[in-house]
Amino acid sequence: MPAEGENLVIPTGRNVELDLKETPIFDKIEINGCLHFKQGADIHLRAKKILIRGGELYIGERGKPFTGNAKISLFGKRNEETISIDNTIEAGSKIIANVGRLNLFGKSRKFKVTRLVAPANIGDTKITVGKNLDLVKGDRIGLAPTGLEYDKHDTRNVESYDKGTGVITLDKAL
Image (cartoon, rainbow, N blue to C red):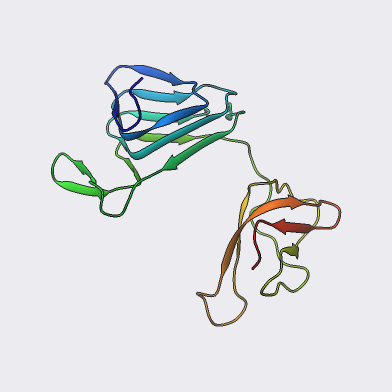
């Protein structure tokens, strides 16, 4: 396994199972073969750029969702070198550029949208939504505006959710 700041290349025809709890921060990962997360493991893949060129990146499988905790973090600065695909297409930095196949199969979630059942005000750290949702700590939620100012929205992380009352405790105030 390359060290922090180096490139990781998965060659064509090679099948690599990732089982590290946390990888070094790779400068670039280029996948021409297959990279898959070990089923059930908690894995944090860290890189500045990921290029799925002709290969595949799998987290879980169709019919067999990933049961561990998978996380991919992208690092870098605005001025860093970007990914160039065949010296013709510049794809940027802090990116997952996919020309191959990216397959992410995780736990199925029941709810997609809910409504506030009580007003949410600036400074609130708790909001009330529908009951019995499958929200869990770490979920990211978006609060859309109800007025004409479409850009007045908030996104927050869920710290806790009470299924009985519908109260969500947020990671920071609105």
